[in-house]
Image (cartoon, rainbow, N blue to C red; front, side):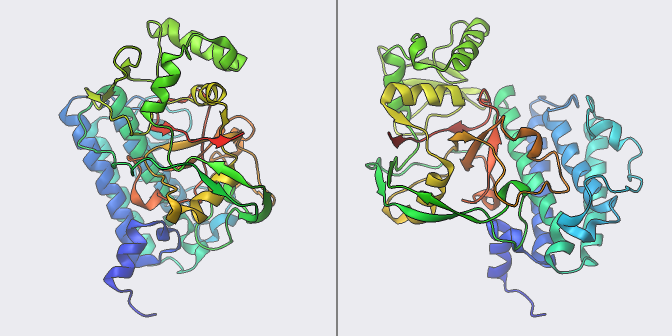
Length: 404
């Protein structure tokens, strides 16, 4: 087998091509993902935040990333079966006797930082040794690719928690393009979903044709300037703009957050000044008018659409525009974007070995597409199908709209 060039390796490590990467590139990707996790952990520890080991906190999330990789690779003698591996294979003992108790299903408390780091280093070393002997095919490399994807997702989760805890993170949002007019996309028969090659998540199965009528879609996600108009027009006081479930959510939030009148972490918005002041990693930042509105729940996005006489895009519309309208100004990657529909299985869906990935959320969670400024470059993948419950505004989420 020919040795890949440095350019090929870089593309396989830093772009969505890692889903088809071979052993050498995967080795680099696994080390890169772990270094990023440890770097984020250092930032949190330096500021004394999220290091108690409680489930969901940065320290716990870091340990959980290692536990996940070890569970499906080091402890899984059926790993070479790839997606055909059963969801609960017989597992070998962990290198850490208390790993399941600390990071497994239902865990509430992990160990201290020193113990977690030692486990992460030993687990990675073991994983890389197993990778050297893995069959170089899609089945043999499936769980190694999955471990990279999972750790990158947990890395963004750590940043979500860093935002919640006020940890100073030197992470800058990409400057948006100059605002552009909405795009008209012609009717088409569109192929939605993944082909059976490389790492395919179960909720991406399988490619199928859908009829997409002509539609108009925003070139960029809704900006702060656009969202301020909704706030100024009493959007947070008009029940007629909200679904009943959304209005009930807002009333609960307002009771907890002193009459909330904007997305999460916003300290000042609209009315007299039109300005937006939002907490960003521990400090108030005056948001530029053209930046994407961030930390917006699905309920808020839906209410904004009702106010504006617009609608959230169907998943097929977003997918089609992202693939065909980039040269005409379709811009994405600043925020994860809410879709109109709930997460549903596609034709041919079969739960993967990681059965908890999507099946429990089918019919409940709303689909997210795109990526945020906090997402690793590898996961800036137009085909990656994210999701979250409609009240989730902790993540770096926003939205764009379509004409009715």
